[in-house]
Structures are given as C-alpha cells and as structure tokens.
Length: 605
Image 1 (cartoon, rainbow, N blue to C red):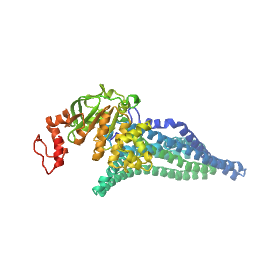
Image 2 (cartoon, rainbow, N blue to C red):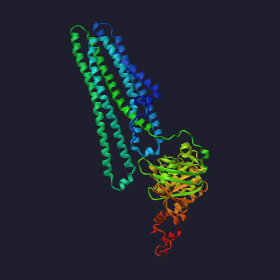
Image 3 (spheres, rainbow, N blue to C red):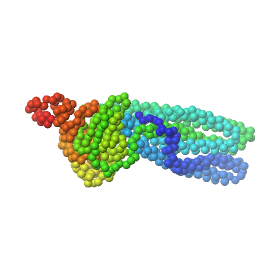
Image 4 (cartoon, rainbow, N blue to C red):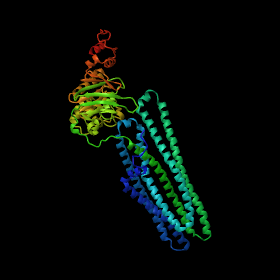
C-alpha cells in the first residue's frame, strides 16, 4: 500500500499551497469580492444604529435607510460573484491535481503498481482530490475571511461598548480552546475515513476485475459480503469523523448562543442604568449575530482544512513511490533496427529474503531469428521478458541491448524499439483504431493496412459497423479472445520494433489462426529479434533456438531436435503438450494403430 506521507522536504500545508499557487489570481479575486461583501455586512449594524437614532431623535432617516439598502444589495452581488470565482478556481485546482496525480501514477514502476491496490490508487485520484478541492480554495478563503471579519467586528464592537466586548471575548477564547483540542482528533478521523474509502474501492475493484469468475462460481453473495464489510468499515470511520466535526459545530453554535444571552443580560442592565444607548445595544447584538457567520466559517474552514491536509498526505504519498524517468524522447528513427539481447549472470528477487525468480541467467540472443522460451509454470519465462522491458530491475547481473545495459538506455528510447504482447492481450475501452495505434499515433495508412492484413484482422474490420472507428467496449467485451490477441499483436507490429516480445501469443487462437500467426512471426523474425514465451509444441518447433527454463535457471538451449535428444525436461514438456505418454526417451516403440494422429505427432518429435 502506498504510504500516506508527503514528498520529502514538504509539509502537508506547503504541499497544499503548491496546488493553489498557479491559480492564485482567481482565488484572490474571489476572496477579495467575498471580503468586500463581508465589509458591507460589517457596516450594516452601524447604519442600523444611525437609523434608530434618527427615528428616536426625530431627525431625517432617508439617508441611513438608503445606505442600509445599498449595503444589502452590495453584499449580495459581490458575495455571489466572489463565491462563483472561488468555485471556478476550485475546479481548476482539482483538475491540476488530478492531472499531476495521473501523470505520476502512469510513470510508476511496474513493481510498485503490482504491490499496490488499484482501487486505493483510484480513490486518491477521485475522492482525495475532491477533498483537496475544498481545502485548497473555500476552506482557505473561509479561514482568511473569517479571521478578518471577526477582527473587524471586534474593532467596531469595541467602539460601541468595551464591557460587552470583554464578555464576548471570554466566550470566543473558550470556543478557540475547544476547537484546538478537537483538531488532532478531526485530522486523525479524517485520515482513517479516507483510507477506509480507499480500502472499499480496492475490494470492489478486485471483485469487478474477476466479475465473470464470480458469476461462474456463484460467489455473488460471498463477494457482496466482502464489499459490504469494507463499506461498513468506511461507514464506521466516517461516523467517527462526523462525530468530531459535529462536536466542533455544536460548540460554535453554543458559544454564540451563550454570548448572546450574556450580552443581552449585561447590556439590558447597562441600558437600564443609562450607561448604554438602546441603539448601541441593538447594534452590538446585530454584530453578535453577525459574528455567528464568520465564527462558523472559521471553524468550518479549520476542520475542512484538516480533512484536506489528510487528503494531501495520501496524494503526495504517490510522489514518494519509485517512478520511471520518461523525460527523454524516443528515437523513432532507429525503432526498426534489429537488436541483440544478452543476459549476464542475471538474478531477480522481489524481496531480499524472497525466493529467486531468476537465478544466474546467462544467455545471448542473436539479432534476428525466433527464440522460443519454454518451461514449467513458474519457471520465470514472463519475468525474463519483463526484465528486457525494464518492468523490473535485476537484483544482480545486467541485461544488455546491443551491448548496452538497459538501465543506461533512456526508457522511452528503449521501449520504442520493443514490441510487447502480454499473455492477457488487454484491449482498452475505446475504438479499434485507438487500440491499434496506442503509442503509434503517426502510423501511416499503408502500413496500418498491411499489418491488419498480416494479422488476419481484415474480416473483423469488415464485420464491425463503423470499421476502425467502432467502439470495442470495456476491456474489449465485444471481441473474442482470439481477436483481442490479434489486435495486441498488430499493435506491437505497428511500432516497427527491432525486438518483438511475445508472451504466449497463441494462447487464444485456433489452429488455423495459429498457423497464420506462425507465418507472420517467421516473416518478422527474418529482420527482427523475436523472443516468444510458448507452450504449444507446434509453435516451438518453428523456432531457430529454444531456451528451456526451470526454477529460474536456464537448463538448456538448442533446436527442437537437439533438445529432444539431449534434454529430459524438454522432452517431457513436449510429450505432455502432445498429450502422449512420453516422459523418457522411448521413441522406438511402434505406433499404436488405434491412435494414428498421436503416432504422427510422436514421429514429429
């Protein structure tokens, strides 16, 4: 799970301000208008005092009445415009945060993402940035505006009656002490609530990612219980956060009510003793009512800021994770040149105390031809390809491309020269063209047409209602497994790679399409280095060389004929894939007439 700490050298508050800084003009403009509206509200009690004095003294009251109406209109108009500017700025802040976060996420190392929960990462992009939105704009404005408005009200209340002001200040200080005591609890509860929401997203993502498996096994209720348990945990954490925020709100309301009652009693006594005019008491009470808004604003801004800072910690936790440097552009001009691959005493462990995924692999692959990698499940075949792509870094040893350690290559340039087809052959939501030209947006139409022909995708193209511009659905739901596999292969070939890595590309192809793909691969291998993880013997026998892996070690390298004669492990694998009983070297047995197809397969060995 990614850590919930800010990037090194930054506090959550400075990190929060870094999101605000690019949008400071809009935020300051909105805050200034809102503050102007606050000043208009602040002047109203003094105008009301003048109006009462005019009415009780028999003097003209037209001017104070007009002034009061003007102040009301001004406070409404500038307040609305100020709030609108702040909300606009808030949207810009959250857009900037999400762009920055998504960019960072897509540059994380594969090993880091493998160890994280995708649902939690998604929660940081969605829920946490929403919390950041309020904290970086409205909460900050509420804090500043609340402080300034309270200060202005206190100055004017001091002019009206210092004794009553002293009573109010005692109540405000008590409120401040209560709020400060609640801040750590509010912050901690907010962090726990957001982590719980991220955990719920992770559970739900895992369930939806295996949706068909859940359905096929009748596990809806079981998975629903797991998601419900995570949702209940989020609810429980949310209740804790709400409890402390509500307590702060209740304390604010109670403080204002207590202050009003005390001022009313003390002020009434001072009016009765002719120590304070009635108009001054009314104005003072109006200021006290007015103070309820800024005080609530201040406390709300403070508690909201704590939730926002908790979100910043989670967002900036992504910045602490290991990321790839993709700053240097790819050298597209060399993308089609064949390469040589060399593994020099390569070992890989995901943890220092963990088992060896690869163990002292020493291997050289020539610049052209097809190399098949075979071995039992868990032998490290896919990991071998991942090291070439630098999805993982070797624990010891080095992987070289054209005599140069892959760690010395700029990543963008390295991967521009490699075409990679995963075993799952993922297809993203979007059009067929989007999936084919992923990372190869400048592909020419003639080359695209040629690749579609070579990968036998033309019949699919003709069948789709909008051709290349047909939406393929979430994860290619409208396509068959074989079609997704061919799309992934076409995507790799469109890059004109110098090195083509295929992780079991024939796993979802029928015999006819497998033979067609074999012809494509053989053609590509004449001018390109092709390394293919394979399980089907019909695929392996076409290879120029075969690498046999077991338990992370290279057991043998050679042609099919060489390995059948000299490698018991390979011979056993080949026999198993042919569904024969050959586990030892017994090819001289006469074929069983009841199984002619099996006999021909044995003869092929």
